[in-house]
Length: 289
Image (cartoon, rainbow, N blue to C red; front, side):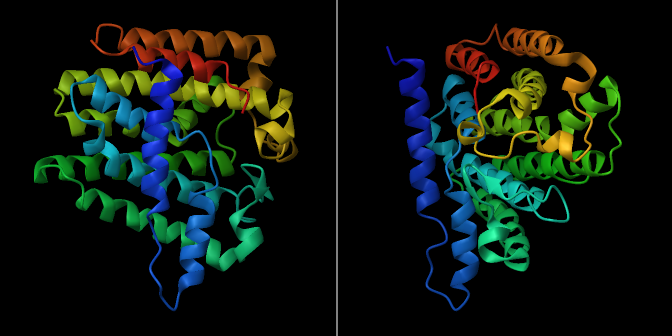
């Protein structure tokens, strides 16, 4: 039987191979493609596309049929990181252990690389080997998760300092972090032709996982080793952002991560073939980077 790590590595290798094949055209605007690939191929856990492939396979589908959807999601995630690091936002110099896109290619090119990655995501969905109905549903899912009521709304709540108590911080996380994770789960379900009820369970799993992920991120912003974490430690505090750590302390955050992880597992506990996804929830709760 395939181990959790072997299964994760299989999904991740498929995603990396697909990402490596993107944006290689020889054009006069090659610098744009270089900037896109610089950030897209910078590494990372690839949690979101891995989750997409895992849900598809758990529900009886072929992981390869969900690959374009997972890669599209990773393009959107990468665009959000490029823009998040810009001087007008978080003004970060490091991402995944190396200089951020705007530090290497300049602010203008970084903005354009992010713009292009977002658009390319929807082109990839349009070319996926799924039915027209599935592709439309996938577009709707991804657009909803990253648009004006999703990830971007969460970023507004973040940069404008509108999250100040536990309820508003939960809302921020649900939109900014949980939105793309929910899309990851839902896209895998769509590729597998899952029922509305199963899709609801998958989104519920991802919603709780997203909150646990963000709270753990808040903890790591204080306790992690910067070389291992891959980005500056303590940046949230320097920017005056209010986090779960401010409200609950390290011990309280640890308890919240454990509770949200439990709820994530509970949401899909009745699904056949969910063993990998249950282990994924546990692994993210204990992550060091």
